[in-house]
Length: 416
Image (cartoon, rainbow, N blue to C red; front, top):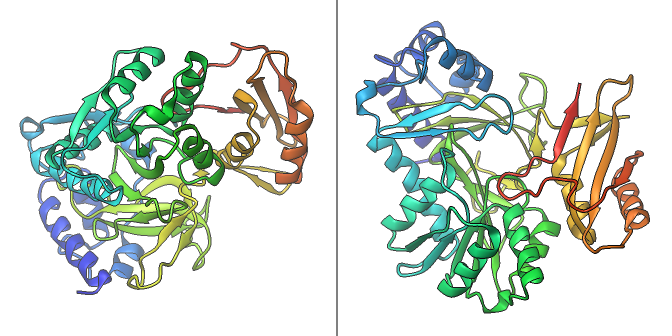
C-alpha cells in the first residue's frame, strides 16, 4: 500500500475511535465535517484546524487536571507524564496501556536503528521525572531484551564512576550531558576510551545532528557512534538518526502524518523549504493530537528509494519557531550558535540573551572560558562574524557565573 493510502487509512481509523467520546476533538471534527473520516490527506489538511500548545494549556486550565483530550474514562489511564516546560506552562499527558505500547513500538525502531541487540546494557544518565522521553526509551529497551541501568539520584562524578564500572554498550542522555560527562572525566582523570560505550543515544534538545556537536561527543567518547532522536511528550518519538547518516533524522511516516508550514504563518512551506513541523499521531487513540503545531523548525530532504511524501530532517531540529530571532534581516537559531561554540572549543558554558526591547533586537553572548586565565574572546568574535553577518556583543564572565546545563539546556534568554 502506498504511504499516503496507509496514512489515510490510519487517520480515518483514529477518527472513528476518538470521535464518539473525545470531548476536545469531537466539536472540531463536527465543524470540519470529519466525523465520518476524510476523503484524502489533502482534504484533512484543508478542513481540520491546527492544535496548539496554548489551546491545550487553556483546555487543561478549564478542565483540570487533565483537560478534555482523553478519549476513554480517566480510570483506564495508567501513565502520567508532562512536558518539560522549556517553552511555557507544562502540559500533562496521560496514556492507557494500548497507547503506551504504541509509543514503545516507536522507540523500538530507534533502538534497532542504533544497532542495539538483546543482551546489550544501556546506561540512562539522567534522573527520572515526569518528562516522557526517557521512560519510553527505558520500557522499550526492556521489551527488546536490553539490560537497563538507571542512573538517577547521583552527581555527575558518582554517575560517571558508576558507568565506568558497568561498561554499558549504549549511553542514553542529552547532548549537553554527554558533553558534561566528557568535562567531568577530564577533571577526574577518567579515560572514557575504557568505558565500553559504543553508541551515545542523544535526545531532548537539538545537537546530536549538528556536525560540530556530534564531533565533540564522538571525540570525547572514543570509538562511539552518536545517534540522534527527536520526539515530544505530546506526540511521542518521531524521528531517529543512524550512524551511517548522522545528519539526517528519519521520520516514522507510518506512525505520523507530517506537514510543514512557513514559520509564523498558516501557509504550507514550499516544497523542499524549511518550515514548522506539524504532526498528527496516527495511533495513541487514548490521547490523540490532530495537526499539532510542534514549534520545531526543520529542513525536509527526500531520500532515494523512499515513497513520495516521505522525507528526513536535514540537520535535525534547527530550532524553535518561537526561539528564532530575525536581527537586521538575519535568521538566528540556537542550534547555529551552539555549532559555533562547539566547533571552537575552549568555552565551558555560555548563554545567549536576545533583547527585543530596543527598536532593533540586540544579541549578547555571555560565556565562561574552559581554562582558567584563558581569553578566547577574540577568536570567538571572529568565528561568530564568519557565521553570522551581524554584530553580536560578547561578555566574558568568571567561572561559576552561568548555570551548568545537565538536562535540557536553556541557554536562550529572550527579553521583551
